[in-house]
Every structure is written in C-alpha cells, then in structure tokens.
Image 1: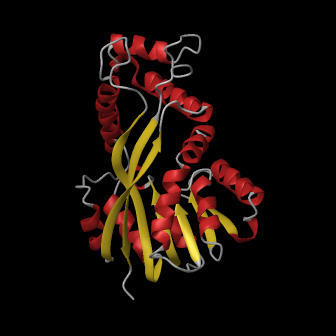
Image 2: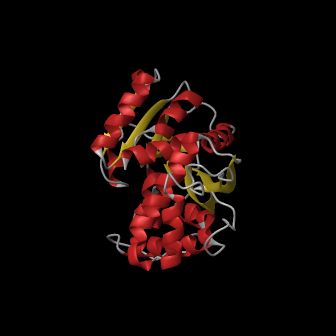
Length: 273
C-alpha cells in the first residue's frame, strides 16, 4: 500500500495545502502537531513545512510506513522536529509526552470501529485551546467523462455504488463497530469540543492529465477491478480492461480527456480553555 498511499497524497497535495492554509488561520503557533493515522507521512511533512515552529508527531499502526515517514522528513530537512509513534489508534496517543495543539485525522477515523469514542480520546489528548481536525467525507473523485465512447455511459457512478457497499462492509467488519450518524459537528460537540465548523476543499487537475495523474488513475481503477471481482458487471469489467490496457488508444494512459476532480471535507473543533 505504501507506494499507492504516497502517490495519492502527492497528487492531492494542492488540496492538502488549501486545507492546511485554512487551518493555519485558526491554529497560529502550535507547539505539537499530531498526524493520527499518518501512513507514509506525506501530509505529516507538509505540516512541518507549513508550521515551521512546530514539532510534528506521525502516529500509525504500521512501523514500515512510519519508517518511510522518517526518511521523507529527513530528506526534506524536517528530521530535527519530526517524530513517529507506532501503535493502534486511539490508544497510541496515550504515549504522547505532552498534549497536542493540533490533532489531524486525515481519512483515518473511518477505520476505527467506535468513531465517537475515538473522537473523545483524541479530545483528551488536546491542550486547552487545541484544535481537532478530521478529514472525512466530501464527494467521490472523478477522472473520466460520463460517456467514454464505448461501453455503457456512467461507469464511475456504478463503481461508486459498489464502493459504497464495500465501505459499508468494511465498517461492519471492524472490531467494536458502532453505527453512528456521521454528523461531524454533533460528534465533535459530544467529545466536549466547541466552535465546530466544516469546509470542503477542491482538487481540480483538468485534462489532459499529467503522467503522474495517469499512473495514479490507472492504479485506482486497477484496484477497483481487482477488489470488486465477480460483483462487477461483465460489460463494466470489459470497459475497465480497455481503460487499463496501455496499448489501447482509449486507455487512461493515452486518452486526452482524463482529468482529476475531487472534494474532501475537513471538520474542526476546539478544546475549551
């Protein structure tokens, strides 16, 4: 997963930059920033760049991913104020030496069975006046025109439906799962935080896509084709096969109408002083 996670975060960097700029208007001089569920640390290192006075702690359940984060931080010149903590969330945050001024959970909370309890645990590790920022939700990404010129129009909408079912099953299989309405303002308030607010950020990389974007798009559709297996409509599988064949002029590797359009939402709240 590491190369895929890195490629995705690097491609979506303009979106993350907008989100961190927005956060920077609320969190002005943080001493400790915690990236909860950091993966290979692409966004963790962006925090170190945007907040040059802060110490950044990347927290993840995967030691190998955190090693990649450490290497990245050193390469970018952030190693002297960059740390890592391996462990499962939210319990791993108990190992922090002091409370955080900003905790960022970027599309990691949905991997925890009891999201309400996790938010409460995150809130406990905040310093008074500290901010919890959760990136969850938004809109499904789009990469292709509705009508490809072959196959049945609306491929991505049908893939969205399959992905929604997969996501629901993934959540249902998590240990200690609790069904919860994803009203993030209400959940953040229930965790004892104040001034909840939300904003969505757009990534718009118009056609024709760059080689890096094409490689990510091919990886994305390849993973969907493999993961969905027999649940895929045979006609849609045939379309994906063409889209993923580098020799086919209609593939994502060669067609000129491939783009990247995505929107991610960030929800924040503050711990009372």
